[in-house]
Amino acid sequence: MSEEISIKVTIAGRTYPLKVRSEEEAGIRSAEQSLEESIQLFQKSYAVKDKQDLLAMAALQVTARKEAKKEVERVVERVVETVEVPVDLSKELLQLEQQLDAFLQD
Image 1: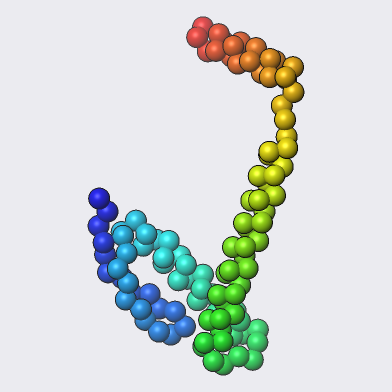
Image 2: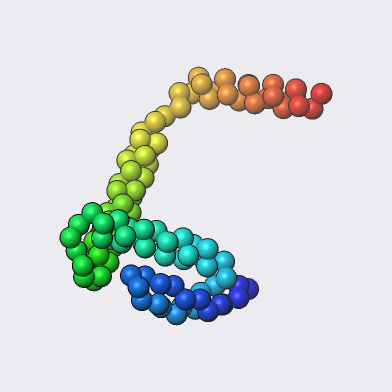
C-alpha cells in the first residue's frame, strides 16, 4: 500500500497544497517544473502580464501536445494492424528460434 504525503506545488506564483501517493511525487514535481518553464517562456515571448492568460496558454500547449501524441499512437496502431508476417517468414523465424535454443543449451 502506498503512503499518502502532503506536498506544496507552486504554479504561476501561487502555492497549492496537495495530498499525493509518495510514488506520484516525482511526476508531479516534474509537471510543476515543466508548467513553470512554459509560463516563463510565454511571459518572455509575448506581452502578456496576466498570470491567468499565461496559465491558459500553457494548458493549451500541454493539451495540444497530448492530443498530437494520441494521434501518433493511433497511426502506429493502424500501421501495426496492417502489417502481416508472411507464413513462410513465420516458419523461418521458428527455425531460427529453435537453432538459437539449441545453441544456448550447448
